[in-house]
Length: 496
Image: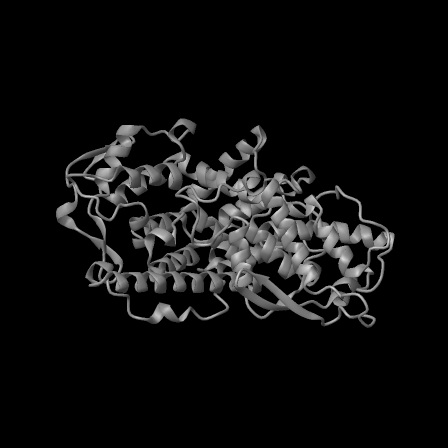
C-alpha cells in the first residue's frame, strides 16, 4: 500500500513525537484494546508479542504492516475473464436474466474472498480500512450489477487504504461502479446530475451543509456542472470522459471562480478546513469514541490540520488518532459496538476456530445487518447503536451460541471430547466443518475444556473476552467450553 518507511521518517519529528503517547510499557489489557480497535479481536499470541512495548512502537509497527499489506489469496477467477456483454446487447430476457444471475454469483464469490482475507490476514488494520472506505464511499452491487466493476473499486480502496485520501477521492469520483451507483454516468451539460455533486460534498468530503460543510444549494449546482461528461464505457465498464457532454463555461464553487472540471472542484473541496475535519471526525468515531466531547473536537481539529498539511496522508492521521489520550482513556473502553463483521470475524479469529468454508460467515454477517458489497444506501451502514436492537441482540447471541454448540461435547462422550472435536456450522444453505482445540485456548488462562474455571481464571477470561465489566452471572459449575459460550452471551461481549 505504498512506501510507509519514508513517510514514517518524515513524520517522526512531528505527529507521533508531539502527541501524548500512552502507555510506555503496555499491559496485556492495553495491548488487547489497541488490537481490538485497530483490527479484529486478537489471539493471545498476538497480544503477547506487544506486551511491554511502548504504544509508539506498537502503533508504528501496526501501521507500517498495514501500509505494505498485500492480499493473502489470489483474486477470484472471474476477475481475469473478459467483461460480460453489455445487457442492452443481449437479445432475450432469458439471456439478461442468466447474466444477472452470473453477476450475483460472482459478487458472492468476491464477498467470500474478502471475508477470508479478514479472517486470516496478518495485517487486520489494512482490512479494517478497506471496510471503512467501502462504507464511506458506499456502493452496492445490487444496483451496479457488475462484479468486475465492484472488484476494481475494491482494489482502489486497497491501494489507497492508508495512503492519500486526495488520490482516493479523485479515483472514486471516476470509478465506474460509483458513477453508475449515483446515476452520474449520464450527466451532461443540458441536465447536470446534482445528486452526484451533493453526495460528493455531503458524504465524501465536507459533511452536511448545516453542520459546518460551508456550502449551499448553488454550490451543488455549480459542482454538478463541473462533473458533466464524466461517464462509463459500457463495453468494458471503464471510465470515459465525454467531452461534448461537459459544461465548459465558468463556474463559481465555494467562492472560487473558473472554468472548472471535476478534478478542479475536488481540489477546491480538499482545500477546505471542513474536509479534513469531516474525515478525521469519521475516523475518530470509528476508532476512538462514538460521541466526541468538546475536548475531543479540539483534538479532531488539530489532527485535521496535520492531515491536510501532510497531503491527506491517511496513515499520518491514524498515527495521530492512536496516540491521543482519548484513544487510551479508560472511559472510552467498551464505548464502541462491534459491527457484524467485527463480531463474526473477531470471534472466529480469537478462539482459533478452524473451518472448511467461509460462506456461512458471509451469510451470517448479512443476517446480522452487514451484507458486504450491499450497504443499505449511499450513506452506508450507520453503525454504533443502529447495530443493536432487541432482535439483532438475540441474533448476535444466537451466533456465538451456535458457534460453540457446534463444537461442544455432548452427553456421555469420553473424557476430553472437545479436544480436536469437529462439527457442522450451518447458515442457510451454506455449511462448514468447524473445529476448536479448547484446551489450547484455555491453557494460558488456567482453564481446561473439561474443568470448571477457578476464580482467577474467571477474572482473566472476563478481561480477555469483555471490553467492560460483565453484566450477567454465570452459574457455578459451568465447565470449559460451556463457560466460554456463556461468557460470549453477556451484552458486554458486543462492545469493543
